[in-house]
Image 1 (cartoon, rainbow, N blue to C red):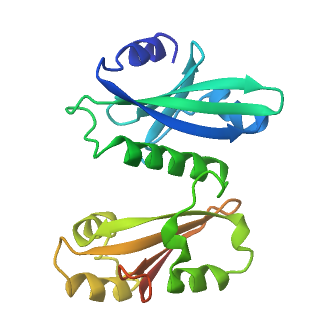
Image 2 (tube, rainbow, N blue to C red):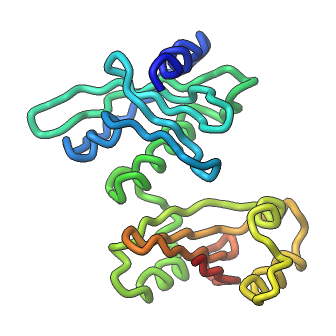
Length: 214
């Protein structure tokens, strides 16, 4: 991207906040950043590159720089020490630095499939644990978990699908208002890229619906 990278990096706002990461990467993992991540389609959310010994995380749709990560190369790996997080409200609406660091660690966890980078507390909820224990070779899956409103679920899934894939989920969606929330567990196989999403009530004790993605 050449000059584009420089102009994107230079656009990082003067308003930012510092967050502590203290995340150790293997040299082989860090090489992903050295090569750069440049999405080829709009489904990918991030552009990632290194410029002047700083890692930039950039929203792919808007080209807004959200995170700048400062690191230290050590004999046995690379320490991601701290980050600057944009505080330009027109570009990024943060609810606080603790949440920003949590989001970034979740991104790193998903990139490298390393659960030690960030441990989701929801993973310990009863039914969610049972779901993961029921899947053979669960260690081969990239795992992420979050809260989704019914409004977002409606936007993500095509409920006009005539195959019946979404029938179970549609019954749940139709019974709740748009602002209601569910816990969503997303699993994607690292090799086959096949994925599945499981939806639970907020207690994590009841599996409400599951969707399998080809």
